[in-house]
Image (cartoon, rainbow, N blue to C red):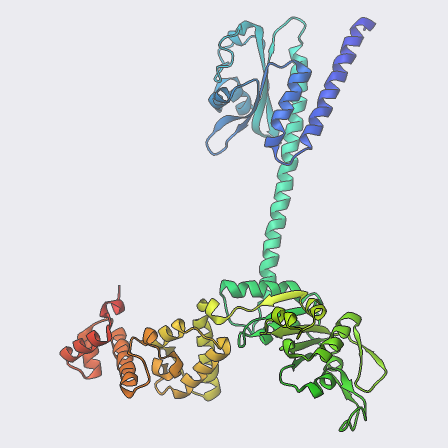
Length: 519
């Protein structure tokens, strides 16, 4: 080949290599192909002298071929560029998977110019090249380009170059699909793992499915495997100790001791000895060496309940153990290492205690590494019936009395009460009701007087004999109507009343029999 002919060919090949390199860099810039398709067409226009270019994709659901990206087309022209399989040159290329070259679009009836972009041009001077974009044997779309036809343009070379670019686009699609599939698999695996963790760490000793409790379960699952100090906060009776148990028994320390200390129940004079132990003769009455709770909990968990009640002196010693992981027994000089996880709980407002100087700020931050708030029962009302049924079954087994159900008025009272004593108060109420029941049913009058409110029972204010009798009467009528599916006559017969008296009692108590009718 003459040198003069070789140089243009070398320049063309170098230009093609530059274009392919630019496109490869563009395709690597984003996982979303919509972000890179237009820049690919822009690069083709700069290197190939392309007038217009499109990337069309096949919608498998509708069978339509739509323009996904374009160069040299307006928004309206892009919107009009819609084809069905086999329709026009683009439709033929996508249907057959074979490329097409149209030297003069004015001479090919297959060229539809659906976009209308060539209406005001000399169509005999425009060439059209379209190549399929394939994923294996499947055609997913097409890459097309317009250019002015001249004698020195080699359309076959353009076809070859565009086929290479199409293959690069297809490969990018394939890689992105693989990445998305891998990401989806990871998401599904993560979802399964989270569900597994939730099942594994759902504390069997805690009753409740409310959203507020689900958040507590999530926190328990997150902190159980670590050794971080946990501060459990919540009102009295919410079950803070149960949360501490759940954390311990879901942790790697589960086989080691779980030792609990109620800091409010121990006098200040003995709390230090209880926590750290003492040597023989350390004080009057210390007749022998005694291990403290920190030593007894070695390798396990120490639960300090009501930590807000610790004296300032004990707070200093506790802070040292948390910071240095070591302590000495009272009256001793030997330093003992403390391999113990500390979980604390309080219903006190520690921030206010800090303001008044009753609680150390540095200790607060050492304890508050991972806080968990246990919600009061009034904020998890959907758990009330679940808890009530649980306690009814528990005390039925303990007392040997069979409880088959909780009556509707009793349920209304349980649900409307504000439960200042939280779960502990509910447990005590159900225990009392089980003991009082004589007919395998927990009735409203079995519940404590504090629950016998006018709002809950529909009676006048409690306190008198008549009010109590009215409460019992109303409940018996409601139960009879419920059994009779709202039939007042049948309910009256079951209670030994006339229909007239039944009607008067129903009106007196404001009971709507329709609510008990079967729909």
